[in-house]
Image (cartoon, rainbow, N blue to C red; front, side, top):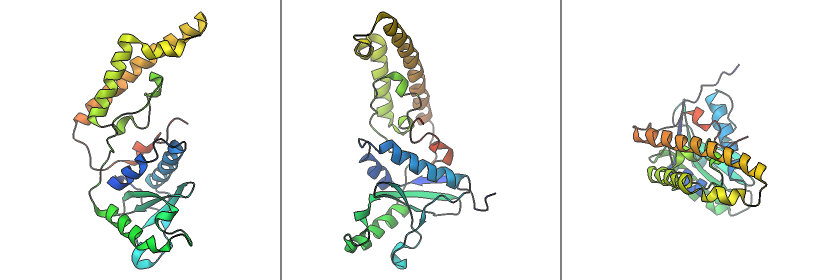
Length: 226
């Protein structure tokens, strides 16, 4: 039974979102997201989240936690309040001078993390779009709720265009047997309907006033399916 206070609010710095954006085309992107989500969900359950105090000069690094979320990739966090976890930055080891690598960068690194811990935060990065090949990929896509309003409307228009023309479906079924073609077409149409509904739901949600922070439950499925 946990004795730690449960984290109920997740704040995300603008620098965190910028760092994450650099990983969107990396093969380990969703793996990194999954590790971050695991940390957040443990904090939300009142468990040890895994962001341990950073071993550095106390005056520089006091109050900063860190957790490894990828190959030489580190998430830095702070805890502004007992129930709040802030995701500050995601950086490679050389950002802060790992072991004997560029130790002179430690001061600058700590300053940037501290700045990220106190500057205005945002619940969404406002991505401009997401890539998809099959409409079924959109339902439950971890980035769907992170799209900007313009991104959502652009995605919705792409889906409407596909519903009118079925160009992507045509590419997907090219060369298939009639039996396989029929199965793919049926699944595609179903996925398209569900994707349109999911995007509509997000458009309505973003039209409402948004909380300045996220709740830990938002990170369920944040790393993608499976």
